[in-house]
Length: 491
Image (cartoon, rainbow, N blue to C red; front, top):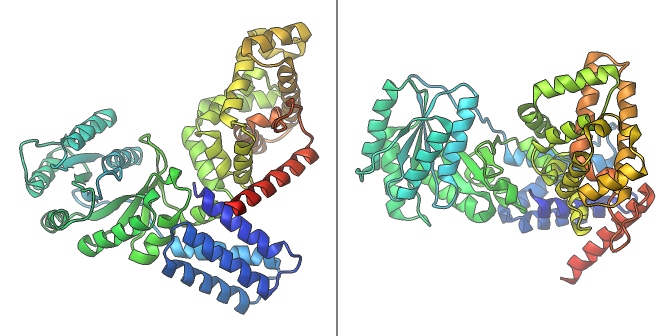
């Protein structure tokens, strides 16, 4: 998410701060690069210019905090301005009597019907009782899709395949909702491939006669400035209450997230970050700003972990820690827990300082998920006794385990060395209090999630795969980063 924007912003900050002393001249040059980064991210010219003017005014005209050096100060101001640009926002769905009516609108292909299902799942998880209304009468496939989603979620779906009048369908659906004891009705309205008078007239009629409590515009974030223009057109016609940006996980630029609130005045309520029904998140401007600046998003990682992790397994692991025991079975279960958070690339993007490493690993052709599977394969190749007592694994056993996993023997040795270090950490945890043990367990699981390949060490590019020292890896990172900058310049 936002890879291109993050890279450009990081380069701009390095240009500002890499000359020793931060001067007014450096700041102006750096902010011009920031402006270019925003424009390349497909933010509007108006937004980019106003943003830079605000940052420059606040930095050059304000007293620098003694708690921050000038570099930290400029970064803080940019972060605060990004938050101001995209927020504030409230992702709660209001409760009305007898029920809340939400109207979803958007162009065809924006993911509107899928978003209806995702929103329904969120509502169910928060204790609400939703009902879907198939009001997209232009596209039979949309009705079929909504019925499938309703069946998956056990959510009632109001359907009338004979009617050609979406207003009539919505009105009758609301009457039926009173008898079904639902408290949220979600209207999935029709879309078009582009904005036209017929579409807008139909949506205006639905809004005027049904009078929904909330109107959300669903739009593909990857369309950038076109998404903002569409949001403005829909808002002029319908007075939107919020925007839902879909496909944000595939958006490397971030222009829609940057501009939609500033241009339309309509807040982003939710973001779609994947294809599954649980891939709809609240929009947090502060977290988005942190991601854009390459500082990660720890709160989202924590919330995802709380939702995905098996509490019973965490409790069992904590009990093991109390005894100072950490077997390879425990390590395997930690990896399984970590895999529930999503791809390693996604996890790394949420951890401060790890986003750039993810890009460098790509250049090294190192796939963290693949490396994690290799580690799992190694552990699965061991006998139950070997997983519980890795100290019995001699060279003969290593050869058998390596052959079973399809890797070199040295990989088994590296895994065992890594496990030995982690087991030593766990022994130290055994003397801690319950709260400290849980915090230590969370850190250990985060380490497993973020760096499964770290136990192997990223291979030297084009080499025999010899593990590099930390100093060699840092030198290699700088060399690759320089090569990448030179390559971009040549383009």
